[in-house]
Length: 260
Image 1 (cartoon, rainbow, N blue to C red):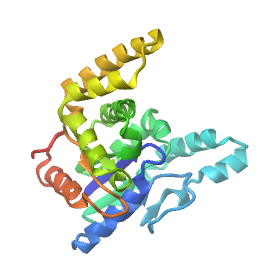
Image 2 (image 1 turned 180 degrees about the vertical axis):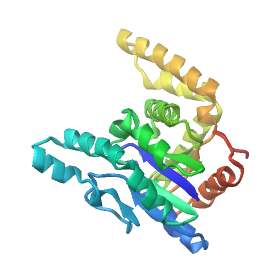
Image 3 (image 1 turned 30 degrees about the vertical axis):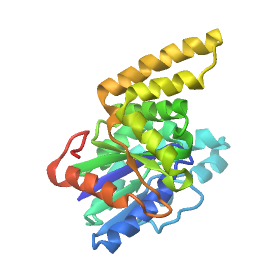
Image 4 (image 1 turned 60 degrees about the horizontal axis):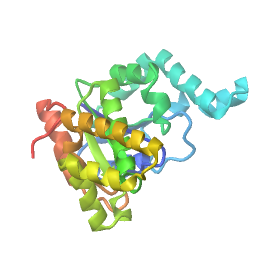
């Protein structure tokens, strides 16, 4: 069994990618199951084998305790810890080779609180990985790219799992923009030059640029920008490459990077 957790900011296309990738795996003959771990989602494009809303619903908590949207999600995710053993038993009883786990859309609530890493740890099979989903439309600007990679780095630090970074929605950007984003991964100097062009000459932005340069150097040193898989949850482009990288982790326990 291989548990794959899909993490990403709201609007990154994470849930759609889970749906499309599960269909791709099934067409390839693999036994796959989907777990929805988002207690606040209104609509799912897939039929979940396990849906945490059957255990706890953020909407019901909001109504019962008169909570706001964020507070109800916090309460729901925290309550999943109490039900972690039950949820783990349900997941492991599925018996599928690939278990795709769709995490909450509000990743800051899930990833940067204690409950998120606890759930990831408790629900992980012997082989597990994180797929961090980046919105290519947002990442096409140098500052957006840096912000996305910092979130990716933070997620890897929090969950301490093999992680694959994917650039989703490439069907919404042109080939030149895609090539530029990928070049930022391979050539940090190009990214720094792009950041300089993006900023103005105000004192505040000069300070911001200096900070960004240091952050970019850290990202490049750690190697987080060296691997980025372009995919489209809409067209299915790049899913074969995503599978190849995940399969390397599954069969070999490959750590945070993968071999070209």
